[in-house]
Length: 189
Image (cartoon, rainbow, N blue to C red; front, side, top):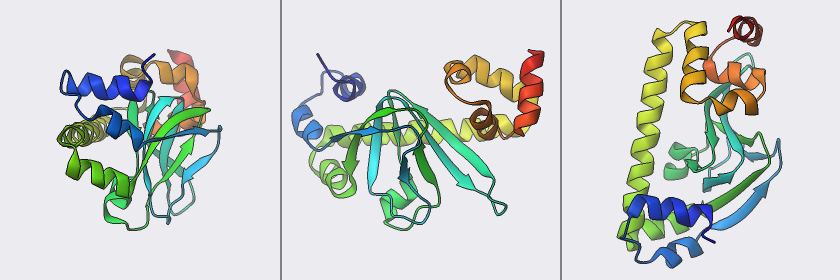
């Protein structure tokens, strides 16, 4: 059986899978419990995670200590605090498991070594960055122009599994809506 990370990398590279075993050897399988903190603001982000199973939340706190979710990362996707990971500077975001997770983690030094020595991995990394950037820009631009009700409808259309998997509080944070407003609007749908 092919593990989810191998399957993901093969899907991005097609037949160009030379060095696949070398790439996979750099990843460490991690099980994270629900609520487990993988990164706290102020720490240096040491890993990029591939989510094989479960769900991660990337979030920040505002000056009033209200939690704002930047992203919710589910299976077959990558998660990291890329600015800290790339620069070695303290993270400005937090990463937490919101479900029990099976992750494949690669450390910063190993990641850099793969980019420099395995052209196919560099290609995968560029695809990950482009997809992450496009997703973030699309979400920000979309949410700026939508009402709270339209954001909920957007989520139901574009990421429907999140509605049944996650708490109303977390979804409201992701959508940038007060949790009471979210519950009231959701009841109207």
